[in-house]
Length: 254
Image 1 (cartoon, rainbow, N blue to C red):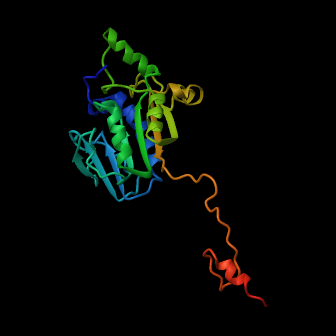
Image 2: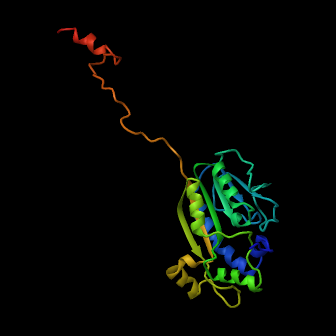
Image 3: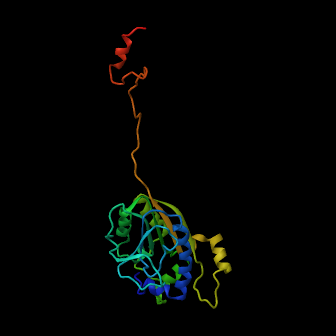
């Protein structure tokens, strides 16, 4: 089901701000120890999810750039196509995808491009909406006339994403779920409520949002059998290792 609201509109709502606070905390934790030279955030261009990362060159890319939500932003801002990223192969150390797969026309193509531009050992961090949650129930009620509240063209489960990443030689090393409330309003709900605490402990897989971190694995050669099959006789510092060197020394007598 295609949504008729944008990610920027969602983040401007009370529910979106409730989600954004959790997402900021996850990105801050996941990118703080990522090092390298080039980092790119694809999507949600009005928000800096790279603020806690120390990589010197940071790029924000989206099909149409949004107004900034903060006064200072040192990132380079570009417009790009999600299916053809304008970066050289194996040139990036870190890529962030805040709901970019859900907003993309072809999420498979975007993931393939991310795999192409990341160096071996590079990291991708992404967030998405989990429809196996109370928000998922609200989403499916839209078929019966409920108000549209989530942005996105298509929604994927964590299991689907892990399969896609595995096929592209990524290893998912960290992941988490969060936000368990049906809705949010500042007047009637607190983020430290019993529901949030109970969800983290008893049904974390039913959180409304998920965050995944995956590393691109380096494909290397594997030695099969003995690397060296020929035996050499070391006869001293003056000995040669070519064939026939043994016979030259055997003919000498002390």
